[in-house]
Image 1 (cartoon, rainbow, N blue to C red):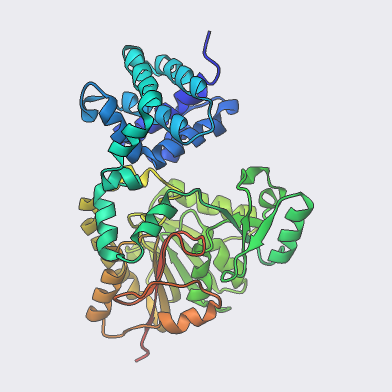
Image 2: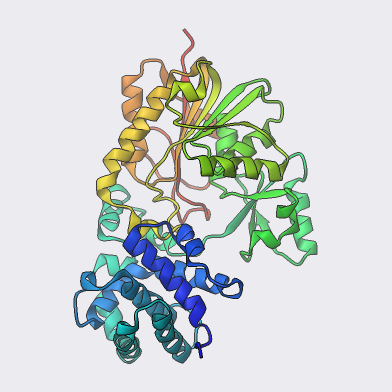
Amino acid sequence: MIELGAGSRAAAVRAVAAVLGDGLMLEAALEAAAAAPADRAFAQALAFGAMRFGHRLRRVAVQLLPRPWDDQKPVVQALLLVGLYQLEYADTPPHAAVSATVAAARLVGAVGAVGMVNACLRRYQREREALLAGADETQAGRWSHPDWFVEQLMREWPDYWERILEANNAHPPLTLRARRGRISRDSLAAEFAEAGIATHAVSFASDALDLAVPTDVRALAAFVAGRCSVQDAAAQLAAPLLAAAPGMRVLDACAAPGGKTGHLLETVPGLGQLVAVDIDAQRAQRIRDNLARLGLAADVRVGDAADPRVIGDVLYDRILLDAPCSGTGVIRRHPDIKWLRRPRELPGLAARQHDLLNALWRRLKPGGRLLYATCSVLRAENTAVVKQFLADTGDAVDVTESASLALPGLPPRPELRGPGLMLLPGYAGTDGFYYACLERRST
């Protein structure tokens, strides 16, 4: 007989092991874990929690294991993280957390580790305070982030780093964007209120609405009917910063999954053309699907946005470059980034960002505007990229300060040693996001 709850824990363990061992993104790993419908929500909560607090829990496990952490198979590492997460952070009764996790070990084929997992979890219950104190002697343990990232934040954000790390470990709000042309934000809030769902408006993003209690959007009639979309308030600033106008030709580069594409079309329904490009065909299909739900359409293309064969030889009035980046500003939504991202990857990402910026600039009309955006909090991908581009490009002008006047009520922001606008996690409840508005001088 299978222990009650073992199936959901086994699914969570498979997903976490796929992140640790195969480098899969957590959402994809959860889909592959194939939990039964009744187990999916709990499996997701366990997997996300184990990834969110895993760097601290790993340092607990190191003190419990008879052999080094790196000598353990990913599935055993995952069993320990999922089990310890339940004992320390979840509302699971301790006896159920231990017995069901031990039962999950059998379901995931780690029969030989059953005794060890059981012994580690039960010892944690007895020695919890001492084990946590040992883990918290390290920065990585105390903040549950990789050492390199903590150290990088301490250097780059000496006045903010602790608050960023705390925000990364918090559960993010569910932020919706009212679909202009179908419903106003006030009407959407009233619709939710009638259904007993509390919300509050985001002061600096005119279409943004936070739900007091996150829920599965697929259960919201307004979402299913295309009256709203899921989009963080910081990401909703792209459309007003780009400041497109009716009749303009707009390029949305690296556009998937299409949130900003949809917002641009909603904000300026009279656009002359909107071309949305993504290099991945599956992700490009997500753009089409999201636009279809909203009753919108764009010219969606698959390919490299830096390739003129993809974007054509025309010039654009507005270009949005949501550049591929480390994702270090959205760790609270994607805690697997803590495990998947490596500092050695940053130079390659910055080089790609430079290449895209230079290539797309050649497709911008004189007098046009390019909005460079990342969901990173690291200077190497933000101010450093834009500062170098401005130094190398004689007809480029940073107009971020004047463009931000279109965003009344912005929360307090850190001073940047360089161009652009930075929103940090932990401030006004948003993700970490960087923007730089660049205009091309008319000749």
